[in-house]
Length: 414
Image (tube, rainbow, N blue to C red):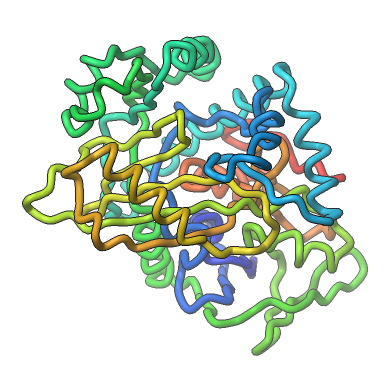
């Protein structure tokens, strides 16, 4: 079949790879000048089945309420007259009870584990290099209460067959000596040895190059404007530069998927959530961390990506505004210095912000929706790097009419 994939981020390029491997004639369209220029550009770099918890958790409503008065909180909301946020928020709040949170988290963990195996197969197939660091991720907790809460979730990880161990502060330092100066602020940690890290942007660009060598066409600097529909089928999409006809279309535009889907009368339950990152250069005199992880108290993630140390934080509900305030950059620089005083050159921060395409449940939308030849692979939220390889494989299975390797629910649209 001729298949048109809309979006050249992680979701779009992994989809192009999966469909190319099926023998399809694939075209990828993106408004950016190159792959992975938006959400996939400078994310945390964590491949983290062991931390694949739904954000719709029992404590989330109170955290969002506190953010109205404390703008240094990582999870925050900017009140605005936005009907889309109200609809999304109502569904989000309904999932913040203990039972749906556990159900959604378990589904996300299982998807993440499947995706990790799929990612390994892609790497074996293509040889793409992306500063892949194995050895697990460290999830730090500053108080005994926070550590106890984390330990209580280990039953979910075991049900998802994800290995996890509780570490004392001494064991944390033994595993990651770069945290030594932080030792007195650590109550303990969870270590998930099968988790990993890597540069999502480098991976996506490398995989796109591999796909191009196999005949996949990439059309950059093209913004999709509209659909051409005849009866039950889409016959073409129109961009600001041309028209593209195909037998099937895959919508993988991240936070902008709902904008284009509305032209088909579809209401996708996706809302943009802004995140920040700051990257610092590493030189020979620095002692950066080896393993990546998350400081749970501040929701600050870190990873070493080759000669770069990156920290990320913030989940802000503020619509499509994608401006990173200077105070957010300063906050991340301060946290980087506190975590790893000798870890990098903190005088040269490189800041970035991006919009995560969040669903209320935290689960991406994968499968057919609307016109019979429209397929979704979108809504990955903060877990795109962890899950994209798996959702691409699921979509390829479903498009081929096969039973999927990994059972996953089809999209539930309002």
